Amino acid sequence: MFTDAELQTHRLTNLGSLSAGVAHDLNNLFSGALTFTAMLQSKVTDREQLNYLHLIEKTLNKATHLTNGILDFIAEEDQEVQPINPLLSVRDTANMFRRTLRPGIELDLTLPAKNHPVQIRRGELCQIVLNLLVNARDAIGEAGKIRVTGIYQPKQDPLTFALKVEDTGGGIEEKDLEQIFTQFFTTKDKSEGSGLGLAIVKQLVEQRGGRIQVQSNPGEGACFSLTFPVTTIKESKRMSEHAPSIVLFELTPESESPLAQMLQSHDHSVMISTDPKKPFGPSSPKLAILNLLSCTDAAELLWKDLRQRHPGIRTLICAQGLPKKPWGSLSEVSFLEKPFSPELFERTVHRLLDKRGSTEADPSLN
Image 1 (cartoon, rainbow, N blue to C red):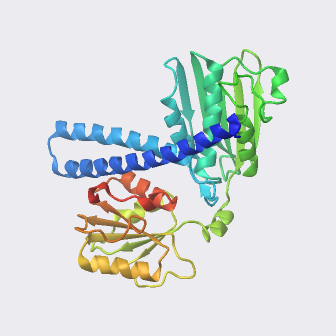
Image 2 (image 1 turned 120 degrees about the horizontal axis):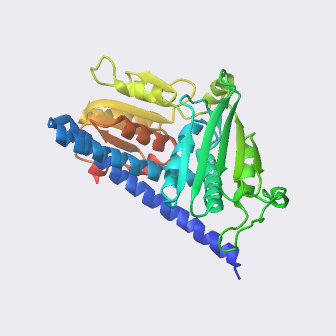
Image 3 (image 1 turned 60 degrees about the vertical axis):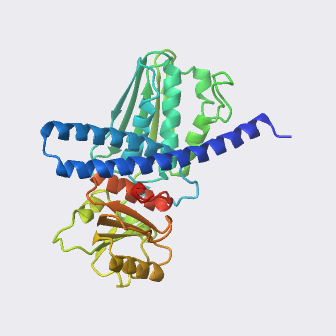
């Protein structure tokens, strides 16, 4: 006989799988809509119509950020721990959570402009931030403010990333502060909380070499302070030997392709080549991007030769127009039709590197 807790765990597991599938499908639809919006923007000259297209693109980007936030939260646990941009994960989680707030609750988000990497899974950081935001919202009730602040310390050559989540709720009783991170301890009704949220937060923070503290007085709100060690340049170089990497094959006559600049602006480790038949070296990249003029038969043969020599590598084809027939299974190749926005390109690369895009292709191919 299963207990209620076991049945609830099973239901949540199924819900997570279902949510991931729905988010993937929605991202496919959004990607297609963004591609066609970009194509229209390149052809439309009327200023009023361009403004409408810009609003459509902005709305689609917001929708995609929401689904990406869901995917980050339910990322696979066996995903390799790599240095990430913590600002992006905090921002996306906060923006996703903002939509759940009651009208009387404000959410202020303050983050530095420059990123320094922290070694943690994206899903773990999203889970940490989301748990703290949920607690803050529940503590406030109908009206109040949540402040999320991130800073690097010290400003020059930072050693830690400090994150604070503050609320203007009723505060925490002194007797409860001592056991606030204890498993199954909660001041909520059983129907509203399990008492596991903060215990999980503490465990995740400490697993990544961080610390968490709480300060609160009854009637004065609460402040949760987290610190994570920043990954140094030396550590980043050592870890980059195992980190996801990209090889970009520039197979167009353009003297300077924007794709390399887009990748480098998001701190991707990129190797640029003009010859797909040239050996990669001692370590094989995780993702190969082929920047083509068009999806010709010769281009397909080039891709097949690449797959034969590197069977485990994912490939992304960027070209004018799409192939008339499938090149392979969805797990082998993905396509982006030019022109596309930098945001769409980065999201596609991000999903492929995170093992999420391997089952996706441009919806135009379906």
